[in-house]
Structure formats: C-alpha cells, structure tokens
Image (cartoon, rainbow, N blue to C red; front, top):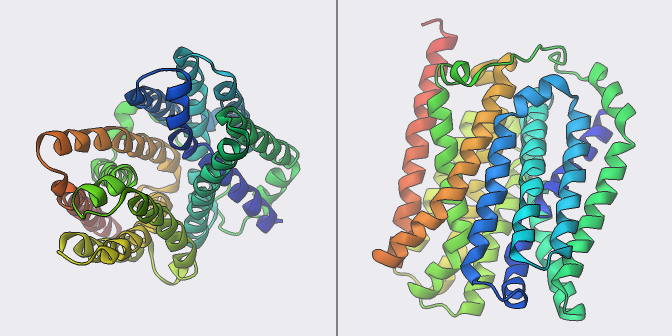
Length: 393
C-alpha cells in the first residue's frame, strides 16, 4: 500500500512538471497570433512565479488546516483549470489572468509533496520524485510540437495538458482511502509529528535558516539561468549553430532528470550532505568543459555533466530539512525554501540577460560559478552549525 501511495505522489509530480515547459514551447506561436511583443512572456512568467511564491510562503499554514491529499487534488484541479484558460485565451490580459491560478496551484503542491516525502520517505524517493518532475517537463514540448505540427494549434496543446491534468486529478481524488490508510502504516515513526505553525518572524529566527535559504536561492539561480541561456551562450560564444545549440541545451534537462533517477539508487548509501557535495563536484567538472577552449562537442558533454550534477542537490536539500531543522519545523522551513527557490529562478535569468546586453555573453560560466561557490559556502556553513548543534555546543 505504501508503494501505491508513492506511485500516486510520483504521478502528482509529473503533473507539476507538465505545465512548466509548455509556455516556452508555445510562445513563438502565441505572441504572433495575438500580435504582442515577444518579451511579454516575461510578464506572464513573473505572474506565475509570484503566485507560486505566495502559495509556497503560506503552504505550512495550509498544511495545518488541510490534509496533503486535499491540497494535492485541489492544486492539480487549479492547474488544470489554468491550462484550459490558456487554451481559451484570445487576449494578453487573459493569459495574465490564468497565470495566477497556475502559479498558486504549482506552489501549493510543490511545497506540500516535498514536505510529505521529506518526512515519510528515504532520500532515494525524494530524488526519484524530482526526476518525475523532469519527466513532465520533457513530455510537454512534444505535446505542443504535435499540436502545432499536425493541427497548427497551440490551443490544442494546452487542452491536451489540461485534460491530462484532469485525469491525474481524478486518479488522486479517488485515492483518498489510500492516503488515510498508509499514514498509519508508515515505517519511519514520525507520522504523528505535530507540525509547528510559525509566524514569519519566528521562521527567520530559526538558527541556520539564512544559510539554507541563500543556498537554495543560489542553486535555483544558476539552474534557471542554465535552462534559459545555455543555447544563447553556445551560439554567441562557442559558434555553434542555432539548431545544434537547441539540442545541446535540451540535454541539460535530460542529464538532470537521468541524474536524479540514477543517483536515487545510491542516495540511501550516502547521506544528503555527501550527495550535495558530490553534485557540486560534478557541476564544477562540467563547467570546466564550458570554460576551456575545446571543440564544440565538449560543450555538449559539459551540459550533460552539469545536468547530472544538478540532479541530487535540490531533492537532497529538501530531504535534509527535517534532520537539519527538526521534523516539527520542516513544513515552515520548506515553505520558505520553496519561496527563495522560486525567487532565484525568477530574478536571476533576466539579471543575467542584462550582463549579456551590457557586458558579454562570455560571462555565462563565471556567472554560474559565482552561484555554485555561494552554494558551497552556505551549505558547508549549515553543515558546521548542525554538527555543533548535534554535539550539544
């Protein structure tokens, strides 16, 4: 029964990933059909991320009033509605309107399931959970490609994803008895932990909280910048053709998804701290291939290596939260972590764009390296703090 619940949680995380890569795939067609500026996608992205940050910030309060099952099904239904809204939108303001429920639903399900798995499952399951998010992000562009190629309709692509979300909603909605039953059977002995409801002031007073928040902000800053700007760097600096650069950049997503899946098999043999260090070392190795003046296929290798290195970091930071900050505080801390994660992924790609415009595209690997070093400083500072706390200092 516990494995069946885990499968349902994985399915829910596929639903979380499905919309995330849809807008980028559809936007070249959307902005032309609506006759709007291409850069207005940034407005929609900011609205989505703002909704996500807000729902993440209040997810711990929501968790005190509603069961995880109810939050998950409500969030999936909300994103299904948002995708349907995108498919029916004929004006830019309509896209902006439906971006709000999309962001609110995504933030709630992300924080809730991350906290649930961190409390009730081992590290490998957290790693696999996020690999299933990657599955969702890989599926959506193919759905949109089918809709545009064979039906010349981005609306159809959004409708297909909306119906898929609705199907996942129905499956999880009907699974309520499983969620209730497994709660009493879980083998980690922490199901009856009373999650603490903290004010924002109390959250920020938790010892070590700023280390993990800046670490998460740093990681998501360079991850999102890699996702958004890899292809541009390859074209402008490495003189790779646009078509080839697009395929190279896509391999970062594949590397990250495969990394999370493969590393899940060994994550229980190492602690979260070791997995994070291992991921950082792999990222630094991949960055060397971008920094050195090597043949273009080394850039391909570098992006795949960086993607694999990114694999364990996000899930291991989340999974280590109950251990680092106590199970009672996990929901409160994860809500803040997710907010800072989305803040980094929202702010840093456009800021890097300013560097490209006013400095040089060659700064790309150094920009990534800066945030990797910041991640190292913050995670190691937290590790030392936790070690001293456990020794009673």
